[in-house]
Figure 1 (cartoon, rainbow over the protein chains, first blue to last red):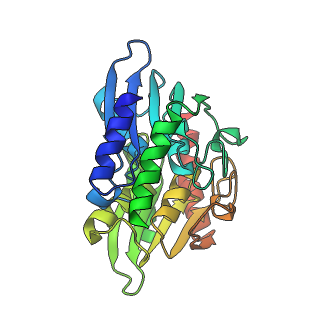
Figure 2 (figure 1 turned 60 degrees about the vertical axis):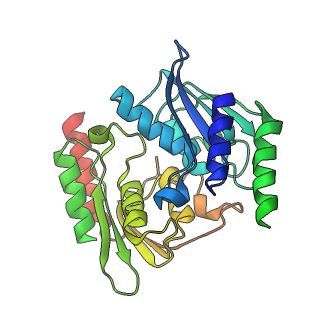
Length: 144
Length: 144
């Protein structure tokens, strides 16, 4: 999660919403991919940190489904990212801060609780929550 | 929608689930991007047709938000794609076949009906529904 926080910090310094993600091979703990948000830099509405590591992970492991991987992300995934995590069939999701406004795991549509959700990962929220949330708070307080 | 159907057909011929999408500039009707599903080919769990045209559209118009664009897609978007459409702030969504199992617009989490959904496009479902659905039916009947 520290590496995800580093990625979040770097994203914030580049003017992106400071969220970072790391995809890890479950059995070895080896890092498969790490990224921060790049929505503005890439001009890509879908370039949330989670989506970027899923794309990179699929390419690097030559498979569109990644059941042998876990994801660490500093913020509760939005509904887009939560559904992508389900589609990719990840084993576990660890996330930092909860997101009552934009989250899609414990809030909003609660993607994994939908009866139509065909793969539900194990979910652990609130990991390094304070550090993750304070990055976001600082970022938005400087902009308002 | 005919171009989206062509993309879907091409995707099916390549072994992908036959769904196609086209992103169009609202005021001119000009095509910004067209793609079929490429999940298997790209080893990318997120490479649904809708996601690909949103990514391409953002790059081509140099903007991560595309309020001047409409999307045509042959199948009701899944929750991932529906949320991406909201994030990209598209003006209109036109889709073909309804998807009671995997859809996220009229089914499942009904993304645009969530109170946390900050941008809701105009939605028109069932456009060229029969042609869209029969492509999918043929594809799956050949594989079962």
